[in-house]
Length: 186
Ligand code: ADP
Image (cartoon, rainbow, N blue to C red; front, side, top):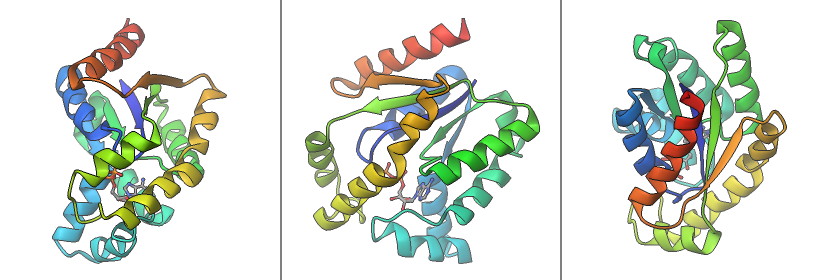
């Protein structure tokens, strides 16, 4: 399966993504993880990206699209993948559509994890990552609302979107996600 996993910062997509890829044997493509690895390795791209990440802003589309284009060519993506944290803007979604159309490998589903904003703030403030200070958290939530949320309409228009409740126990949320994917897989 080829899946896009969308959720606001703090929704828990990373946690659920890890379990889903194990269960279904898909590659886990987390742009947040890729950018943090590039930053830690101090590559040119990583250092540039860090300026945006540490401010709670999105990294420019051209950088992130280039990273994903390269990643999708790797062998492990042939058995399906879960995109975690990408696309985050309409421009990224359009670039992804183009790449997938060229390969003749459309997405199977866009899965949204829904969590109310008060709960997100509470979770992020308790997490303690460097980009989790209150000011930066607010900026990331704004970036989500303004730049990423429009994707929900973009994908629901073509009936690709399935939304699940992201509140409750990790196991229960996982079961909800699995129910959606199992239905698709037949
Ligand atoms: P979160 O904890 O908000 O889910 P991620 O770990 O997915 O965050 O990403 C951390 C940061 O990396 C984001 O705040 C953003 O600066 C950058 N980033 C990750 N994916 C993208 C993307 N697709 N487009 C632009 N920036 C991105």
